Structures are given as C-alpha cells and as structure tokens.
Length: 242
Image 1 (tube, rainbow, N blue to C red):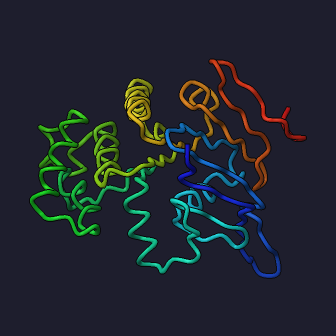
Image 2 (image 1 turned 120 degrees about the vertical axis):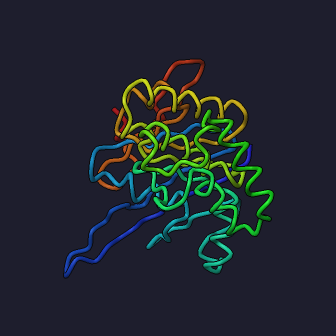
C-alpha cells in the first residue's frame, strides 16, 4: 500500500508575544490507502492543528508534509488547492454549509473549483444526494434541514470530487446518538469500498469501534499509536504508550 498523506517531524508553532506556543511538536503520521485512522486526544492536545496539517489546510513550521507523494511546501498555493481538492474531502463538525445555497448547490460548489462542467456538477450532486437518502431535499436550504440531514449534505459535498481521503472533524459531535451511528456506518461503508477515512475525535469508544489505527496526541506530540490486528488492539512500542 502506498502512503497518501505523511507527516514527518511536523511541528506547528505560534508566537504569542514573547512566548512560543507549540501546538504540534515533531509529529510523525503515515496514512496509507484504505486506512481508517482516528486522531484522538483531550482539548489542547493538538488534534485540530493536526487535522489542518493532515488535510494540507496549513503549512508546518518545521518538518515535512507529503500529499500524494509531493512535499506541499514545494507547491504553489493554487497547485496545492487543486491537489487537495482532488485528494481530500472535508467534513466539518459545524457542517459549514453555505446558508443561501440549496443542498444540491452546496454539493456542486467544490466541483466548480475543479473546472467540472455545470451539467456534470448537477448530475453528480443529484447522485450523491440519492446516495445519502436526501434526493427529496435537494432544493432545501440548510435551515430547512435537520442536523442529521445537514451532516449528510456535508458528507455528500466531501465526496463531490471523488477524493481518495475523507477527513472528518468530530463527525458525530453535533448529532444525536442514533443519527451519529448512521453517519459512522456510512463512513464504515465508504472505507470498505476503498476510501481512506480519517476522523478527529475525543471519543475513545467511537475510535475503537470504527478505526483500524489510533494516534493519541498529548501536548502536541504523538503519545501512543494503537493498531487493530485480528480484532485485537496492539500498542506500538513507545515509551509513552501505557
């Protein structure tokens, strides 16, 4: 299997007056085709910063980030946006749907930046809405949809450019238990069909139920890596792994 995304000694520092905040500090993460990865950790552990670096939404202060085998710091901003748009689909905790666009129009939008024709954008958006059981809601605006329906639109939008990787930030965080379970089942099915899934979560039960590999962050570092082998979790030898 080839690596789709790789962080090598990646760090992200912020200057706050005279103080340097090390949000992420020398992290190594490798994501291969077909992986189901969970990035875990308490508040302030570096999960959100890690998500931004994994998704190539931000550049590292130190270290290297590879997307599809390319070092992203060698790419222009426009080239990076193109590659990221094709490789990675994002599902945000707050859905981030555009309120004055319909469900179908929200799904069509990412395809516009990939220069896909309007007819194909429309057809693909309708197919994706059918896939997430929202074909009868395609002309509804976000405020006319329930939280679960908005999350389904967000998933369909993430799939619009047929990316290799789906990166989801707390995908069940704003949903009731039953709707959250349905969303995770949908992500499980995408993984079985070959999509690489990365979820950022604080929920160990959710991570252990769905992921194959768990990266546990603490204070901006990878504290522990666990892998599911034959339905049993094995801790990768690390001094901090307890």
